[in-house]
Length: 443
Image 1: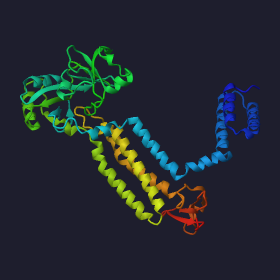
Image 2: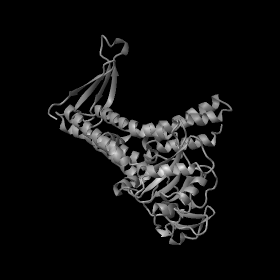
Image 3: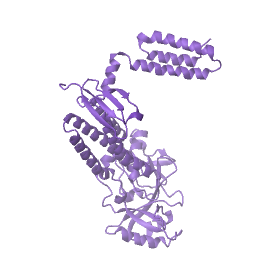
């Protein structure tokens, strides 16, 4: 009887994982089991392959429990240094993946502060939802509004990573190109983000003139450019692709208040079709819509760190090293959650006029509430299972007692320090409790 090739491959890979001194006996046992299987089962080639896949688990178990080097590695993984190093590596991974873009943006300050920029939208009656404005009304405001220096539409497109904007969009923002220009002579024209220019075009200065999305490239945005939650790779400048409502950007004249501009735009909106009865034009300063996650979450992070550190010091005041280790874990884990929230969740904190992301509320709740809660829970749970002397994770759990006899007998779990400093008893039941028993007072 011939062993199918897929089963032979699985056995060959598994035997390579088995320690050398046990490999021959292990292979003989599995060869005998395979021959028994072939003799008692017919036409079940797939089931034989599934059975042989169990050899991988068997080999991995032998490898993990073989030799002093593996045992030393497993013990080292439970040390306090390994725990802190793991948190530091995760923190470094977040920094490397994000480049701290949002954090650096907040530290540089808001470029729209005092720029007299506003987002124009419409609200529905009895709902208050912010919707877009018909492009015809935006064009009329750009020509006739006495309170505005200009107005331009902008919106996402159906193509991922591409946004549409009016030709004077970047002029109203006051943005200057890193390469080329942002002023449009022929439409349509494409403007690249700095990241897209670096990644896809390898920072080639001759990118101006190339064609992207059927439009010639006229320039590259500066490295630190951002606008609300829009972060496309390519901006297509040109007239609106359709008459569908879209959010609009406006620059107010110096000295004009948003409320005054709003009053004028509502009067002008009623003179241009289509007229939506009951809807109202809203003028919102861009600086109010910009997400400031670091500023908003910095104070809660500081409060959580201070409270958790104080609780650790008070709770374990008789074991300073134990308290310092817990405080270090809290600081690293909460900082990890803070940076991940700021860097990867800031777009969900931005008020996006004209569009609504229904998943933003759920993801934001998880990031901003469940994240710190889960971090603190893990810190405390990990701390409870560590030696009070060497801070190593306790091993060799022993379960004893029965839950049905808790009123008469003890039931719980006992763990032992691998260095022999003591044991920890954790009682089960409605009122769980832990008790540390030092084994050697001299250590």
